[in-house]
Length: 197
Image (cartoon, rainbow, N blue to C red; front, side, top):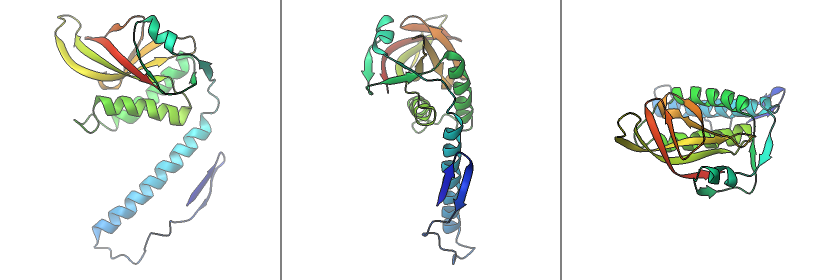
C-alpha cells in the first residue's frame, strides 16, 4: 500500500494480490496490473492534491434563500454548506474543466448529468466545498428561442451568496446569474430545479 503525508510518499508496498509469476503473454493479467498501478497513482494524486488545497478560505452559508431569490427550488442534501469567494471558484473550475477536457462527453456514459455530478462531487471531495449544485434546465437557442434539449449543468454559490452558472459541456463557460433564466454564449438556460450537497 502507499501511505501519503503532506510531505509526500512515506513508503510503498505492492498489494498482496499482485502475482509476479504471470506469463508476459497473458495480456489480461498485464492489463489488470497496469490498472492497479493507475488506480494507485490516482489515489496518490488525490491525496497530494487534498494536502495542497488547505489554504483556500472557506465560509459557512445558508443556500435556500439564495436559490429562492431567483425562484429556483430543489433539494438540499447536507445540513451545512461551505463555499469560498468567486476568485477561488474560478480557479477551481478551470482545473476541473481541464480534467473534463481529457474525458470527453460520451452519450449515456459521460454526458451532461454525469459530468455535472462529477464537477460537484470532485469539488466537494477535494476542496471541501459543497456549494456546487447540479441544476436541471431546458436549453434553447438564445436568438430564435427554439428549444434544443434538456440539460444538467452546475450553479455555484459563492461566499457573498452570488450565483454563477457553469456549463462543462459548453466550453466551460461561466457567468453570474440573477434570475431563473440565463443567456450564455448562444444558449438560453431555463432552470427547472437544483440538487445541492
